[in-house]
Length: 216
Ligand SMILES: [Zn+2]
Image 1 (tube, rainbow, N blue to C red):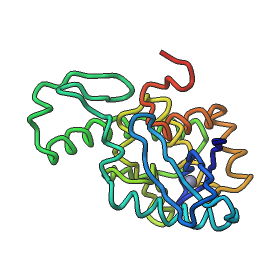
Image 2 (image 1 turned 45 degrees about the vertical axis):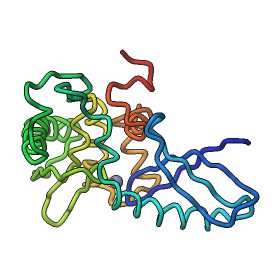
Image 3 (image 1 turned 180 degrees about the vertical axis):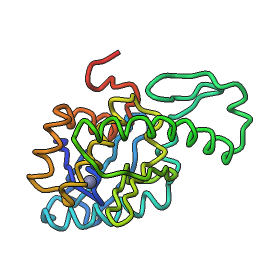
Image 4 (image 1 turned 30 degrees about the horizontal axis):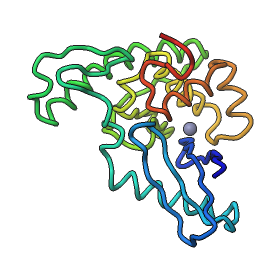
């Protein structure tokens, strides 16, 4: 069976799925392959592009709601936790409650962001002061609320290499100038982050240490 990929932007996040076209089905199905770390999308062979996109959007948002843990699946083994793209030993991690783990990771992540956001923002000549918050695990990596000058980042980013995190920070900072995700937006983003596609792919693949772009 020929395997294709399909990319769709959902709430500002680019979702890449492996596409399987089936002749003998009329229904759409989305699942997450934990081994490979990617989404499998089964569609009727004779469905339109619009149908596939609309249904993927619906199924993806439903999936996120029902499986908030899918992002966390790979983050830890025993007392080893992926933090900033490296496996770190945190004594007692496996015994900590969910709330304790989240507050621990949030603290680590916030202290990184408080340094990185002003650094990258001044690189862009951005004069806008930002309030930074960290949300829990969710489908959206970041949001820039212009009205309050607040940028929220998903805690799931704490597991990735700093350069991958920085690509998300730059994405949000570019929204200070361009609100949508049009041509102008990407032109500006690529100016500050030429390897954006590579980092975004690492995020999609849940590749914390950047192996997908041949780093080690
Ligand atoms: Zn965006």
